[in-house]
Image 1 (tube, rainbow, N blue to C red):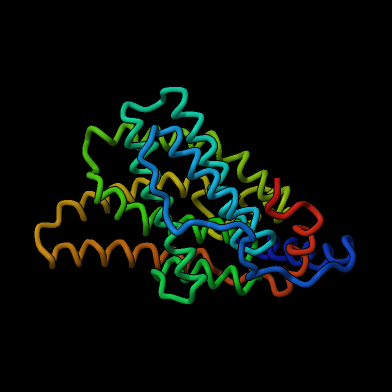
Image 2 (image 1 turned 180 degrees about the vertical axis):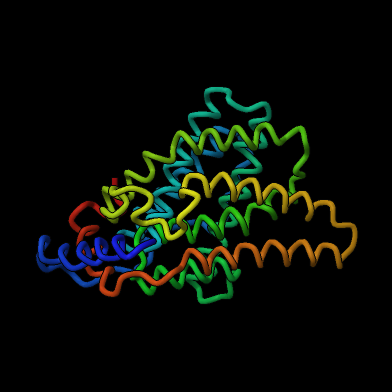
Length: 285
């Protein structure tokens, strides 16, 4: 959050929500999803079916997390995946087997790998560690939790997925078409988080985004463009030393952004946010 006025408004919200909503059950943060979440997707069928499989897994993860502070990102991801599935069915891509198949499946698998590794107490990349630790600490707003996870997933994970598949000039238009899909899903996804997890997001980007400029929506554009460039450098690395330099650039960039996005929240904000979530459906539909 930026500015003393924003901090005061957030503090008032944090203090008032428990009073408005009354006593509630113990905080569920850290709870594991009730349904089985696979460690990886193995879809080899039609692209639309692959996206549907990913959507179902993400929805199960979101619903199982309830009011855990990892849930808002899973909710946003589910909404984006639903939008991608509609675009694949509408014939929006020149190479749907790449955009909706191998690229999307590989990308979702990176998220699942980080999620399961963290849950098992195994090491995760630094950007993901920042996101998961912030969710456990609990005093950031829901938008910050989304941004921290999105930064780790886009800026850290995406370059590796793209580099493995080949970030060719021929595929760049479909990569941009995916961005158009995300653009259409962005506002409904933010509204979903505000309705179910944290009402602060309904007050506008400047109230919850710790970066004064650009907006959160613009950050996603910037991060995806950066991921593409990092992937090109990684794919072009002609020696182990060059690959290490490319990987170091990916990791350090995502980690720097995590520090910027994880500015301290308002003490006590967690209680109000979690109480609101419990009375507004949490991760369920």
